[in-house]
Image (tube, rainbow, N blue to C red):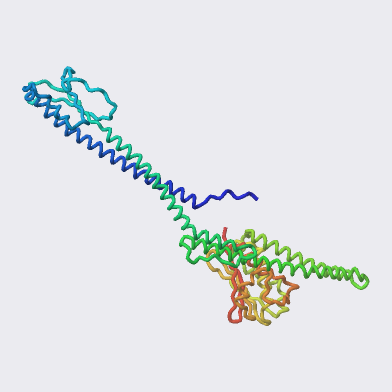
Amino acid sequence: MNPLPRAHSLRARLSLWLAAQSLVGLGIVCLVVYLVTAHNLRQRQVETLTQKEAIVRHLLSNIDEHAKESSQEHPLSDFLIGHEDFRVLVRTQDGDMVFPKAAPSPDNSRRVSRMFAVQPTDGKGQTFNVDLSMNISSDVQHLNRLAITLAIAAVVGTFVISLGGMSIVSYGLAPVRQLAYQLRSLSADNLRPRLDGAGQPAELVPLVEQFNGLLGRLDLAYTQLEGFNADVSHELRTPLATLVASNELALRRPGNFDMEEVLSSNLEELHRLTGIINDMLFLSQADRGATARRSFVPSLAAIVERVADYHEAALADADLRLKVSGDSSGHFDEPLLRRAVSNLIGNATQYAKRGTAIEVNIVIVSDTEVSLVVANQGEMVSPEILGRIFDRFFRASASREHGQKNHGLGLAITSAIARMHGGRTTAASTNGKTEIGLVLVKTFA
C-alpha cells in the first residue's frame, strides 16, 4: 500500500494566502501614498519656480533703472536674501557672467532648474540668459523617509494581519476539528453513530448529511454482509451435512444400503450446492455492473407462455391456473427474462390460494419502459416483508418449509435481472392480492 502524501495544513495555507494578500494590498496602498506625495511635491516645486521666475523677470526687465545708481547692489541680491534654496545665474548673450560676479562653487545637492531669457522692457538693453534653480534635497529626504516608513508599516501591518488571520482561520476551522473528533469513534465494528450537524456552518451541513448517508449505507452493507455470510453457511451446511452423513452410513454398513439410492441422494444434494454457487456467482457479476445482452424479442407474452409450460405441473398440483394479459416487444436478454419470469411464477405458485388464478400483466409504462407483474390471491404480506423480499436468502416464512426446493435467491436474482436491464422491481400487497414484478427499459435498436 502506497503511503499517503504529506498532508498540508489548511490553516497554514489560508494564513499564508491571507498574509500574501495583505502584503500586496498594503504595498499597493503605500505605493499610492508615496506616488501621490511625490506628485504633490513636484507640483509645489513647479509652482514655486514659476513664482520665482516671475519675480526674476520683473527685476531683470527693469535693470537699467536700478543701474543708474551705481552704488546700489544688483537687485537680485535682495531677491536671494531669505531664499537660500534658490540660485540665480545671469549671463549675457555672449556668455559673460552678469550675476553673480563670480561663478558659484559646485555642490552635490539635488536641484531642479529652469532656463529662460529676459529682455528689458524698453527694448534697448541687452538680453539676459537666466538659469534659475532650486535645491530640493529636503524634499528628496522627505520622500526617502516616507518610503522607509511606508515599507515598515506595510511589513508590520502584514505581520499583525497575519496573526489575526491565523486566529480567525483557527476559529473558523473549529467545526472541522469537531467533526474529526466525532469520526474517531467510528470503526468497521461500530458504524451506528452519526455526525452531529447541529451548530455546523451552512457550508458543512451538506457534507455532514452526505457522510451520514454514506455511514447508513455502509452500516446496511455490513449488516447484509453478515447476514449473507450466515445464510450462505446455513444453506451450504445442510446439503454438506447430508452428504457426509449418507456417505458415512454407507461406508459403515455397506450391506444395508442401496448404493444407487445413496448416489442418487448425493447427486441431488450436489445439484443443490451447484445451484446455490451458480446463483451466487450470477449475483456477484450483476453487482459488479454486468448488463443484459439484448436481442429483439417480438412478444413478451410468448415468453411468459413458454415459461408457464415449464410450471404446468406445479400449477396443476396447486390447483392454479395462469392468465396472461397485455404484450410488448423490444430488445431484451431473453434467457435472463425467462429466468426472472420463472422465479416470479414459482414464487406466486408457492403462496397462491388454491383454486385461484395467477395473473401475469404486461403493461407498457412509457415509450421506454414496460412493466411485467405477477399477481396471486393469498394471504396479505406485511410492508416489512415486502421491503425485504428481494434480499438474498430471505424467506417470508421463517420455518423454511420450502428450503429443499428454494434457497431464497430467486427474487434477488429477479431484482438483479431488472437492474441489468436498467429497470427496477415492484412489490405490493393489498385486498388479498400480492403483486410482484419488474419494470424493464426496452430498446428498439
